[in-house]
Image (cartoon, rainbow, N blue to C red):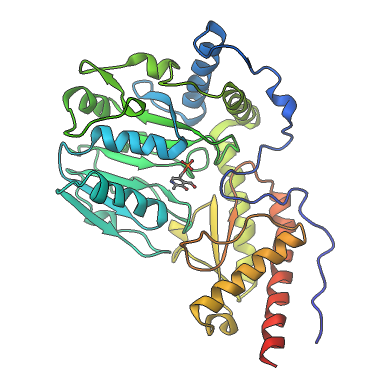
Length: 392
Ligand SMILES: Cc1ncc(COP(=O)(O)O)c(C=O)c1O
């Protein structure tokens, strides 16, 4: 049997994980030299660093001046849970999901908070819920970019400016790579570990004035642990939005986030971050176009993510396999890529359809994506040959 030759060069950086994502180009531990280690985060220096992280976030993302920004515990999950537990229950809620993380928020609303006035709107992997069917006079919880299906909301046009409900948006794999229409979003959350390649365990929570109004006028029927509390005596705890965190943050991670934000500003801010992710996606698109054995999991181009790019094998010899064998095939490709040092952590998410997921966010270099693509062709051929050998 003819062997498919290995490509000549490997990506300079084979890290294409969808979280924690690759560090920014040129990053080294030296970037953390100014971290105020062993000092209190409530000392003047620590507080100034935390405030800087909030201010730089506002600057790079273009968050409106009247929106509050807080650093909260437990990464993106912490920020979403904090919002859901603090805000939901005041009016009916539409829980909108099209992949694994969105489905997790549905479970929380229905099974944990036990909201009786919850409507669940779901779409299968690769598709998106039609926003025309969402009632924006209800509160609405949704994910901007579904990391496990590579499907994103194309824009906020379907969200009315004069909605009665609050829109609570998990934007963790969208922030810093896609436009977020803040006038249409009341809560936006993300983690440092995604598009900016920061560290996990710290979440960002952005609140519109209407979300703050809800916090100050509504008390949920359930108890709120200290880690979720944003008000005291019915008033917003303003210090939280100036860097006075609820509990102790890692100042090493804060320094790393500041470094990532400084890099973002140096290279040209949000426009350049988006351009880098778009260019990475475009390289993958050219490759998919040229290879009919590969396709995108998202059904249409409009909803295709430029960060978590999800691919499926469309070759008839693969699609004819049983679901378990298709999953084994895709795993085989991902592990061949890993063994060769061509790509790390590119297997599809455990609950998603079999395939590959390649992180294309801003910290990933176009040259690395371009060097990876011929390796995917090589690994695909190698797996196919294994299949043929088994059948023989
Ligand atoms: C859409 C989405 N929501 C939530 C999470 C959970 O993020 P974290 O582990 O930072 O809390 C992830 C992680 O990949 C995600 O992709």
